[in-house]
Length: 377
Image (cartoon, rainbow, N blue to C red; front, side, top):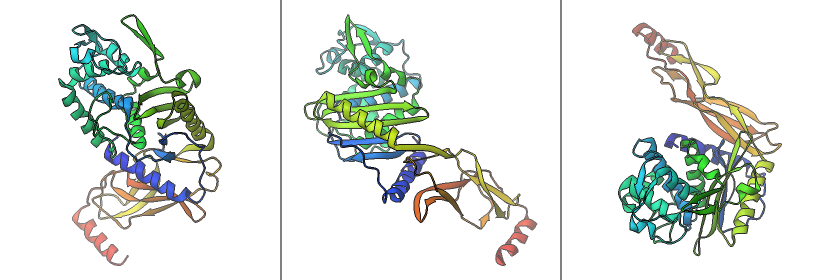
């Protein structure tokens, strides 16, 4: 997600939260240290607790490891069929494993399944070596991506999620990361719906048991250490909507599954998400001075989605405030005003409106005439 898009979604979520605070929808009790429920269409948080607190993420770390590997594949540095020689250090790592053998080449495609499905620490280290030459260099790339994505409460000390000083993440950041992975690498994301993978004669099941329990769940990653507790980022798509539920620090595997399912069901049943405006839709045509044309079309440079508790879209009204007078030159995408969405006197959301066309400066005579018009305006 680019910074302008991230800023837009954050502003929309904050505006919504301010307007809806008077009529909260209470989520079910969730037995975990922290949790977060994100609607990826609107970018809004539907429920949260301790979402910005820092915890050990355990193998949720591998979401960022995968993001960095997928980026390297997109740049042509690796291909699914690329053979990777497994180092003794990678094959000997502790924790969950794919059971790689030192010195034996393994394809990137198999290593990705080992990392995403089996949560193999050995597969993750082998991929880190293939991408960056060492785990330390790979972790540098992970933290660079974390900064780019705006993960303010996340820092990685390794690629696997093994406990280490300075290795932490927040529930909100893990939701943001998972959303970015799904959005930026849709061709790779189906890996996370795979229920099992066999390597070296050993079949291991995906630890995300929601893949068996809920047919709308198609990912994404579990994590566990004694310090982190049981963690899960779960994603489900029903119709156009995709929700991401993050649970960190549950006491048992069964609890991380049940609490994630409760969050997903709450989001889909208690909330609705609707597209209010389409990208490029003209909402007004405003007068513009000193330009080559007399009017400036304004609207949105992206689809505008809004999440509200069900039944609360009724009575919603829109009020456009523009930054008049408009004076050329004016550039496509330049801010032109604010669309305020309200119910009664309560603001539900405020969304930036932009110019949908370029309007260059006009000639000398038209600029002079418009200068006079503006003086008497």
